[in-house]
Length: 101
Image 1: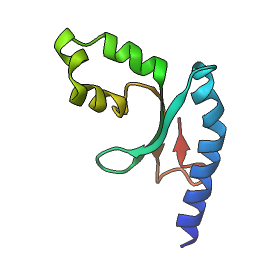
Image 2 (image 1 turned 90 degrees about the horizontal axis):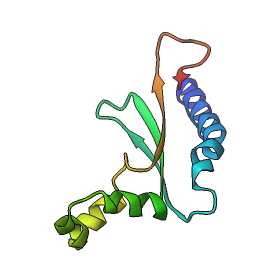
Image 3 (image 1 turned 60 degrees about the vertical axis):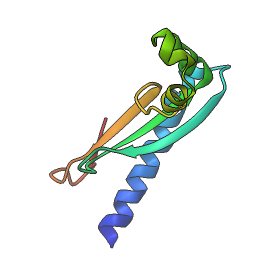
Image 4 (image 1 turned 90 degrees about the vertical axis):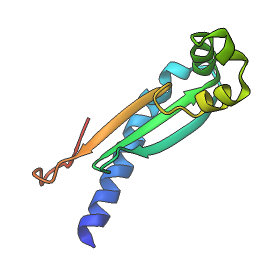
């Protein structure tokens, strides 16, 4: 259990250290989502953020039909790679710091 406790502590430390820089581009913008994501094999953890301005730019880049489709807009609202993102990968070989940017 000590390994899991250490892993949790490192993850929390990484999130706290990354949150400010991750949200900096959203200065003055309404951020509506901050999420912790994993990849398909759960060895990479990602912190993602999304704001109204980023969503507006993403929607504007879509075709006219997709811009008018409420389902597509809802999908884009929660699309994890459309906003700011930071990731850390687990490295079992590193005893000192298993998180790498």
